Length: 563
Image (cartoon, rainbow, N blue to C red; front, side, top):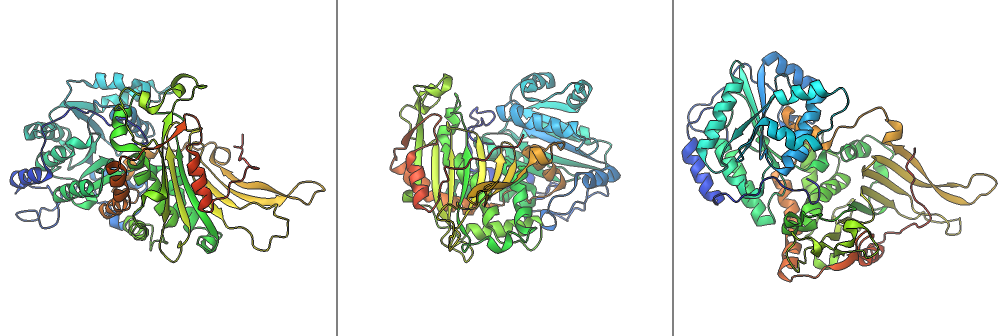
């Protein structure tokens, strides 16, 4: 989820180590038919899939599979598809997952006969879930019958997260749904806090994997808190499932303009020759939110802005901007190149970052008057940063010497996420220093757009250069096309078996390698963040650091969104 989002249920279950749970799984699942783990782990003869099992190319064989192709194949083979939402009573489920599933259903993008099963500890009915989700599900006039159809394919199972018997009961319910189908495909969505990932995945493997079709697991961030905890989680998951069964979701990889980075870079000869250190001065990747924690500081304070946004969302975008051209558009080729570029980045040092924490604006209104520490869910005296800027350097032939500036923060002056590629000054200036740097700006949210800042002649009799732009604003150019939500794309990718827009284990390990030393220093030395005012641009020290890195701010130009 994005910054500050709540993470589902947070009751504290019985604690287990990953080692203990893996041992439980080994003894519980030996000889179980149809439950494939890592290579070399299965016992007994290899079980061939039933004739009706959907044959979809693996992640290493494909990029994104067209929805219509998946639906056609599934219709021919008559499998059932069941999406199991674990943590169905939590905030993530009601605010994001069920609304996403509704939109996929509304647009007829599900495979034929798809069913949805909610699972949580709370005693609920489908009608209870429907009521919880109502404020977050977008229903237009004329959708009433369709909404009823959507909730009709839903069911709910109450059960523990730590008891195997509960997952055996879930499995019985899934088998009932799959009765009459040649194969049953199961997608488990873990809308859960990290504290229960281990028992839940262990019991899914031991008691709830499909005996006839595929089983896939969607895991939400955070994927650990540092290198060690992330490695522990990865080792646990890899001991239960194959990498092609694990989908680590980062919703930024499902955004329209993030996915467009690949096409922009590798389908246009215009950018290929200039995409390097000889022509680009710096790259800035920004994430800004205009609101604070708003009573949800308990979760945020545990992780902070670097773990919540920079180490995942912004680093994923940066890897797509900086990576080399993959051999093909297939998932493994793309992810190989992302890993290669991450390996060229040294761990970030404290002197390469600016950390901030917002304070109330005495002239503001409502929440703007409140500081981060005024949030009653935040520990007294917390020094958790709500703003961070980091300078990163890629030590390879293409990018050596080009700073990549990552910025993210809460309670800032606007809502915006963008990539800003600033080109070098034109050599041999003949216009008396009146020319500004060219910039390619890719607006990720809101109002998707891409524009190239260029110098042109002032209209009329004047010969003075003036800043303008070559503009592709999606709303103006593609006004009649409804762009799907990032989660919608990623759910469909998971159903099709495409992992191109999901995070691989070695990619995750590299991300934590870059950030873990910095995070440990911040926490060990209890670094005091710089105060900045709610509704401002952030700490002035961040602008000063950007300037020292070669970023040139142009005060004479502001992009105006086309009407």
